[in-house]
Image 1 (cartoon, rainbow, N blue to C red):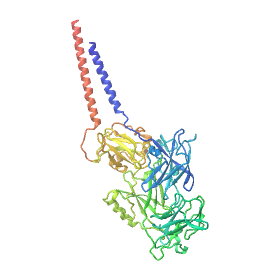
Image 2 (cartoon, helix red, strand yellow):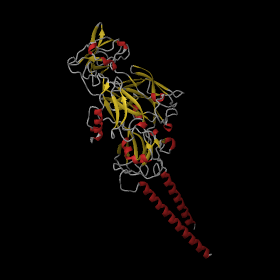
Image 3 (cartoon, rainbow, N blue to C red):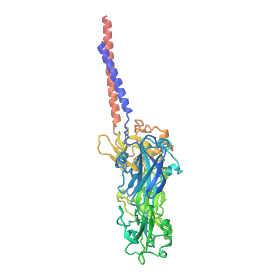
Image 4 (tube, rainbow, N blue to C red):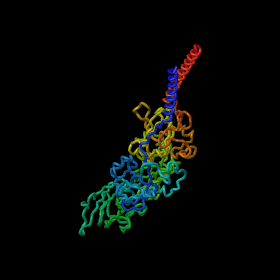
Length: 588
């Protein structure tokens, strides 16, 4: 009798174990965060030459703060601490021509008030934007625009946002056509130093190339110690020196010399007294009877990033021609989302509210030339036709036909501040239990990783997304080949779901309300919201697909069979024990 009772008890224990194990599996944390570093903009307090004093506030005490410098390059934004080991830890990639150094060490500690200060040197072969950040491990502190209280609505350009605007150091000079007022490529500029009342080519200064040929932007630069210098420009078919009356009168709108030169422009071989300060001075060359040089504007450097703690995106770059207008055009629709104007040195920068930016298409920068002679932009009628042709083009992004205005292969994919939707394959079918990887475009490394639920649903909060452009990879179970998607492609394959649930990935809102302040979306560890998806519904299919049993349904089926088996055995044992008990009573 006791033997059967023990068997019955074991059956009950087995039942409880299976129940606990199953529901523990149902609540299992799937996510794995591979990076948890917070970026905080640092403000430039003072700058001179290529040196700046920067300050950041709101940092945690007793925590390592890494000082990072970022620049816009021909390959988007690149960042560095000046230390390759620290760069590897932070998952950032330096431009090989970017010289960046932090006084003392790039690793700092905040004072008792959470403030960090540093002196940095940041130099690059061409004039670009330099932005500085303090980066530390952990979530944003209160007052920094933490993800749990992310700032929404219209940008007021508060002091915090202004900290994210880069500092620019003007180029040391540009060579331009005196008649067309356009930057002149292929011009030779040689630097001479005065010694004993004689001029000598400055060949004995360490690290200095005293003989430079200009590129499409006409820029040149010489980093030299104290002394008196002279510049000698030349180009076949051009004359120097140039009389002031041979220079078009509108030159002063874009070209100039710093007050230290005591001349409005370097039209003759004037002495330049260098006293450990970068001096800007532009040089005209006269084409004489030759046709003035004309060219179309080009983008030299570019970059974009999410503003930490705000639903905004910062765009920055340089172009060859002064005052060029940059239109941000939807690559699918041809819609104009924003227009930005470069300054007189070709630099441009704009912080745009994310509610003005699309989540389902990238933006192409389209350039409109400013004519310094007429003081007007060229007609935009032609560009409308070109944009229409661009949208209708069947060429892939990398081989898009070039025109006068449309830039070469540059696309600003969206940088969503929240992700919610379904991992899908190329046919549009949801992928149950797909491994979801957020990867940095800068380094190609995994920034955050989680796993979709049995319907392929997942969500990732702002705090687990990088501030720089990124892409997604979905790895189906039992597969070695991930499916790569841009953020715009992810939004397009989830178009129906996002529209039905009024989800805006760019502003991290649902039904116009901040999603992280009101929903149970995936938290810091990247675990699942629930087993059915964000709204308790099965994944809607964007295309007609075959219905398949997911991994989650299979597990449920196995569980039910096991439970029925346990119940069947338990009932059988109970009946048998009752029968034995009745026989014993009868015999007694």
